Image (tube, rainbow, N blue to C red; front, side):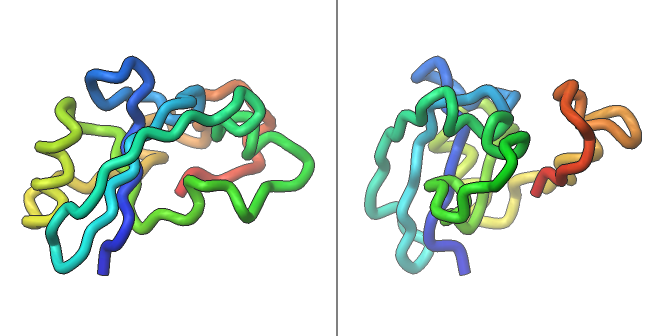
Length: 114
C-alpha cells in the first residue's frame, strides 16, 4: 500500500530528472488512493541524496527514506501521482538509466540506488 510519495521538484514546476542533487521535493500523502495533502520540503546540501549516500554513515531518519514511492520520471507531478495510483506509471529500475556498473555520480560506486 502506498501512503507517501516523494517527487523530485528542484525547479518548483516540474519533476526533476536527477534525484541525487535535488534539494526540493513534493511529498504527497495518500489515503485509499486519494491525495489528502501535498507538501514541499527543502533539504540542505548535506541532505541531498548524493551527499547522503556518500557520507560515512547514512542517515536512517532522512525524510526521503520514509516514503513508499519515489518518482523522478514523468514531468507533471499531479499526472505522475495519478498514474502511479491507477497503475499506469512506467516503472524503471534506477540503475537501468545509467551505464552498466556505474550510477554516473562519480562517487566510489559502493552504494546502491533504491
